[in-house]
Structure formats: structure tokens, C-alpha cells
Amino acid sequence: MRPTLRQLQYIVTVADTGRFGLAAEILGVSQPSLSAQLAEAEASLGARLFERGRGGANPTPIGKEVVRRARRLLADMEDLRAVSRAGGAMPGRLRLGVLPTVGPYLLPEATRALHASYPDLRLMVREEATRELEEGLGSGRFDMVLSTPEDHPGTISLPVAEEALYAAVAADDPLARGSGPVRPAEIGARLFLTLGSNHRLARMVAALAAEAGGLISEEYEGTSLDAIRSMAATGAGVAILPSLYALDAAKRGPDIMLRRIVSHHARRTIALVTRVRGDRQPEFEALAAALAEVAQGRLAQSA
Image (cartoon, rainbow, N blue to C red; front, side, top):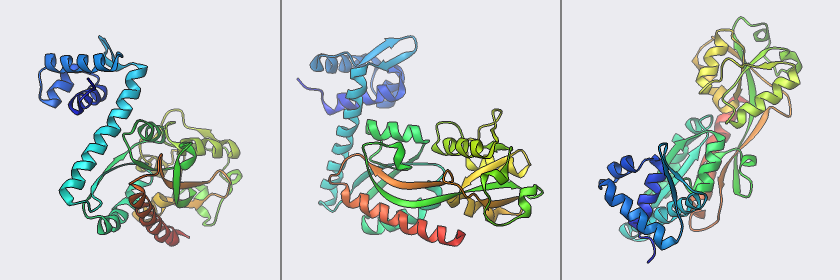
């Protein structure tokens, strides 16, 4: 007997929550019933899926692979139901992971264009750091991600934008006296403010700091670009901001000054990334085109 779709849902929910009791509560069943169904699924698969302990329920190595495949099967079944309800007119659900340093500046306008082409498509968006996007793409949590393509090896990608990086400093900083591009050597031995190490941007900032002879702040890692922008405005250091965000930040007031950085470390490519070609190819291409059109318009304003 093979696992049922209901049992696959139980497996995924236990993996997501790490607790049998919480998973049972979310699913609306008793914990003994959930445990019995999982035991039946493990017996039919011939493998133990979870290690039970005081720390909760953790997937075994085989369990992690089963969870990954179960997510895909459940997502496919949801799309199949949506196709049936809509009479086969390209509906369904698309799970998109996005970098928080990119998504807010491109998605609102791009998704309106996508909705015009696919009115029955439901776009589920989640912002996560680079490493979490790669994990989600590999596990099947995401169908596509808007990210830096070099961080997702073995994937298919369509370019969306080529971003420059800007140095943001307080309005009374000596670097604010100029207005043109600046080289890392001109920034000098400063304190560089950046996001946490699970972001690709943090690694780029580390390379720029090394080129400039500066230091990465050990006391503060921003949780958002807004946070490091605010720190820079107080004179705490130099914030490194990608151009899509920098264009928006420049409109907020005179508390910071921006200068584009000239360096091979100061550019990043943003792309729409997926793992496999298939029946989502039309949406993949349509969303990438919509994102690229919005990015081109925004970046033209900052040129």
C-alpha cells in the first residue's frame, strides 16, 4: 500500500512544524491518529521518516527526500484541482521566493502584468535570504526564485536586471561632498554596514571592504536595507545599497548621500530561476519578461 495524499500532507506538516502535537492541531486531527497515519506511511515506504526526541520530530536523511518529493506531489495535485475548476485555462498556484532586497521594488508592478495574462494564477510570494531561497528551490517549497543566479547551480535562469552598488553615507560625511562615481580606494578604511552572512549582498560587501582596506561591522548586521540605511544616516558607517533600492532610498530625504561604486565587485545580476522546464514554462517566461520590463524602467531613472 502506497502513502495517500493525506499521509503526504501529514508528513510535510510534521516536517514544517517539527512537532507532532502542533502538526495535529494544524491539521485538525488527534495526535494518536496522526502518529498512526505516519507509522502506516513509514511501513508502506519501508523507511523511518522522522527521529523522535525531546527536541521534536526531525526528518531522517531519507525523510528529507520524501518531504521534498511530497511537497511537489501536493503542489501538483493542487494545480490539477485548479485546472479542473478553471476548465484548463492555465490557472494554478505559483510559489515564488524572492530576495528582500529586490522583490518590493519589482513585484507589485510586474505581478499586475502577469495577472492580466493569467487571471486565474495565484502567486504565493515569500521573501527569504539567498541561502534559504536555494534550500526552498531544492526542496520544492518554491517553483521559482528571484535571486542571484550564481547561487543556484544546476538551474535554468532568465536575466531580469543588472544592478550597480552604491555607497550611502551621512549628509555631513566627507564622501558626500562629491556626486560622481567613487572607487573603493576613495571610500578607504571605513566601517562597512551590511546584511547578515546568509545574503549574497553580504559577501559582495566583504569583497568591496577588502578592496577598500575597510572593515565589516562586527557589532551590527542589518536585517533589512532600511536598517543599514538608517545606520549610515547616523554616521555609523558606509552602507552598500543595490541600485533598485538606492533609487527608492534617494527619494526619502537629504539624510544620506549616494555615490555609485566603480568596481567589478560592485555589480550583481538578478534573474528568475527555476530547476526544471515543464508546464510552468509559459508563466516562467511571462513573469521574467514582466520583471525585466519594470527593472529596465526603474534603472533608467537612476542612470
